[in-house]
Image (cartoon, rainbow, N blue to C red; front, side, top):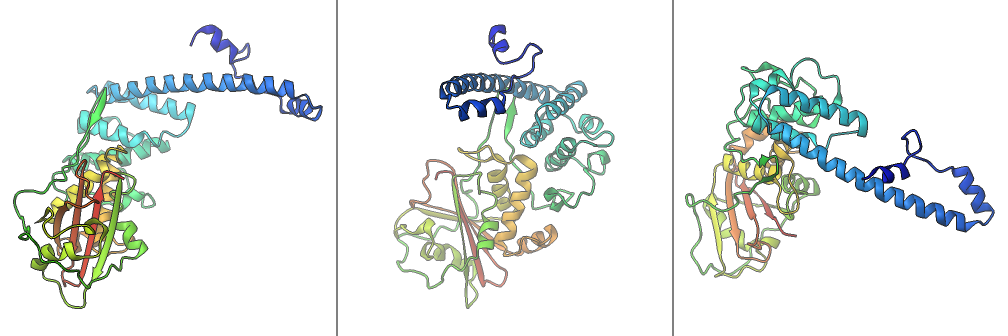
Length: 376
């Protein structure tokens, strides 16, 4: 923006020029609509120019943040922290940027540098405490040992949602995939395809027929099961079937296409359908990738919040309530039998990422399903 344009938006001392509401009211009472029309046009022009300037400056600041996070070294991190503090003071909450800053710092900076900068001293500012919370879980999932770097611990703030998570990486949290960031952008991709091992595809054509089981999912169960995909992918649905007699794990592959679910509603007996038995760690990794990376419509929640959403979906698939502890979720999840499936149905579009997860309870009396697609 040139100097003349800037002067049009400000008074002589550089401050924004505000209208006199009392003066505008007097013109309105006098029926002087021509004055109000001129005033409105002038304000609209100023607002458009200010919005454009804010976008330009915002783009420049976003580039500087990415540049500092991707430039290794203590000086870069300290300058980033100073910049974040100045932006917080000048423009208000930086909360939306902090999860991204945390994941980029964890990718490009060493744990030693972060322990001496981000985690050094007392965090008096809310934004810095939030950055620490997110960064702690990002580093934990990347293998940092809190016992070796005690300064990485964000403290015991039990009121915060992330405090629900284990403060150590658990055995079921295997091979987490992260979005890859550079100064110019990012790239990611959820590996939703079925593996070659553990395949249990039933022979085709499959026997026709419909299962007598009926969906009995509650609102709370549904909302918890779809947590990892909700607002991160195009669409997700959940179903819960409760049986009078135990369902054997060997029955699940043939049973799923017969259930009254949208994801297999139009699946013919010879249509493509593939399913594999998978360990709970593989299921967690799939949920984590969905939540942390997002899809075509969304960039996801990154590592810390993605970790929380993956655990929440796991809890829902196991039939545990929202207030169950992470330890309870882990113990029960390890007892469940897990399946990963896809089908040539209208639900699974196959022009993006999509998958189905089935979870069979240890007693065989509860079968929960999450189906997610990255199209809407």
